[in-house]
Amino acid sequence: MVYYLSQYLWKLAQNTGWEDPLSFLRLFKYITVRSAGAAITALALGWWLGPKVIAWLKRARFGQQYADKAEETGFLTRSGLKRGTPTMGGMLIVMIMDATALLWAQWNTLMQLTLLSVLVLAGLGFYDDWAKITQQNNRGTPPNVKLWVQFALATFIALYLWKSPAVNKLKVVSEVMAPFVKTPVAVGAAGIVIGLILTVLTIVGSSNAVNLTDGLDGLAIGCTLIVSFVFVVLTYIAGNERMASYLQVPYVPGAGELTVFCAAMIGAGLGFLWYNCHPAQVFMGDTGSLALGGALGIIAVLIRQPLVLVIAGGVFVLEAASVLLQTSYFKYTKRRTGTGQRIFLMAPLHHHFEKKGWHESQVVLRFYILGILCAVVALCTLKIR
Image 1 (spheres, one colour):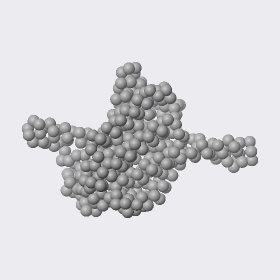
Image 2 (cartoon, one colour):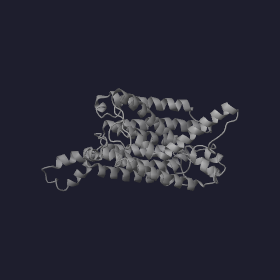
Image 3 (cartoon, rainbow, N blue to C red):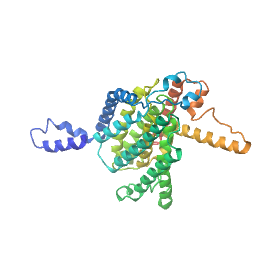
Image 4 (spheres, helix red, strand yellow):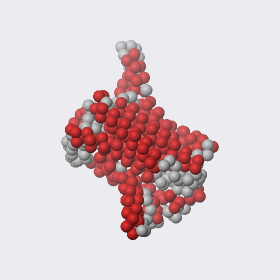
């Protein structure tokens, strides 16, 4: 909206006495300026609306009264204080992120697909949080229902990217790129099949991985911010033909607007982290974690870098892998020996380290450090090809 309004006013001012006073409106053509505006706007809204939303969630009794996995570790020193903490704080993130992106970005197909993913997954997460609150247990929506909705959304997006004439020419699905490789690793019919499968798995996997990481104060949102910084760089390069050609990465027209979205996500995330850091005043819940994970997944797909997300989101991958390994090994050993055995003391991985005696803040900060290292490696893929 800012872009369209500024350019409209600038056009009216040309060849008039207002041309010089309004010359600053030309700045809003630049993605860097609008990204900075989106980040600052989202952060300011987060700081301003945070206390109001937290107070409203408390009045509505959207608090977590049931025991979560953090209490099961036995090392949670303030388990009593965590109960009753408002959840569904992800509504704040999604609301600010979407509104800010719409305010500062140009509205192209890539933006529309990203916003669609965020809204659908936020709605799914809201329903799951609501079920947990009303039932006062940690079950919520049945896992198979959540997976069906996620796969349906991801499949729709994959097929749209393949079949839509406006997007198909970007080769988002038909050519599969891999980190550290200059040229596509799969093209033609094989590329389409692999691309469709990879698109679906990226969106669903990223959404669930962030959701599994959301177990300690500030952990999921902090790691999301780190990955978002990586994608600010990647989306800007992907949308700049000259830079994309120089670095030999896929050029995706219109992807620069996703930089504005990533900046809005960073601003909204920082505003939320202000209230979510230890000791948390609010939890994002599935409303936020599913939406943020899905946003990262769809953005990675749209700029043709889904496998780079695996590197940048290394913490999310480890968290999801720990759950899959723990569950699979437990079922396997129970079937073979009659007694289920575990690889980790507890899954997801952050609870394993709590079981080992790490304080909650230690786990979060050390995972931040690991996330930063993964982000650096992901950015290295731009030069090492």
